[in-house]
Image (spheres, rainbow, N blue to C red):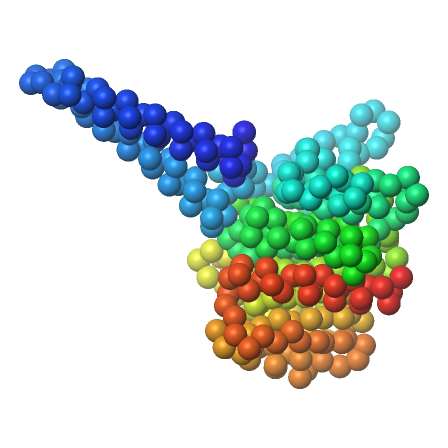
Length: 372
């Protein structure tokens, strides 16, 4: 049973209610004098509080996305120490494993598509991550059984879980609706989190002597997806999008690897990799690496990448992101193209992003279509 599954949370709620009811029923029977009765009452109180605390902790984890798997909670999922060898034929195992399907209420897969639960084990970095993949209905239709499909990588914020892109941002639901309405070409949409290691915000940065987060997204993810799914690998045929830290990652991926990620969008995002107690030292004192992680600095001082970029921010409620967006757009030079999605009012939250994702998915589809 998954750490973040609703079934697990509901099970804990049922247990907590049952234990509390049992304590209330037994309490009068333990209301006696003596050490044994006192110990009984104390034990019942501790048990009831542990059950209630478990419910609160799991609910908080589901809301804020501190841990997404049991291994990550136990500190066992931060880094692969060694890649598995092949099965004797000289080939490595697939870097992507489909672990089942996630019920999101889309309908029959041949008409609305399907969401797979996936695990990526990076053959380049050795890093691993759980996530989801939306497959459009055409992927399962006989008329399209030999077709390849463009890919959009969607990344949530930090701290955050990839499931938030399903339950809160409604990304696969928006993609399925757009595909069925003919507003978006059939596209595979990956849903990932930005953190490649537990308990650290890596800001999609290749940390000297540490996690190679940017390499994971730019190299491991495409390798893994190609191992299992039928994807279009034409120049610039992939897109990326994210909210908050995920938006910074998406823009950075396109600016550093535009021949893979031809278009990217950042929603309510900073344009630099901040350093704080959650990130630790990302640059090991390397000023050039720090500069290159500032996306506005890249536009000013490095060759402009051949990529289409979209930034979304609100004039009221997101003033700092709006100011960064305006400055960034003012520095763009061809062949880089920068567009803006401006809301009169909004916030740094899923209410705003849920309204923006459908618009941005259609924008990405339009931009990627020019590269096919």
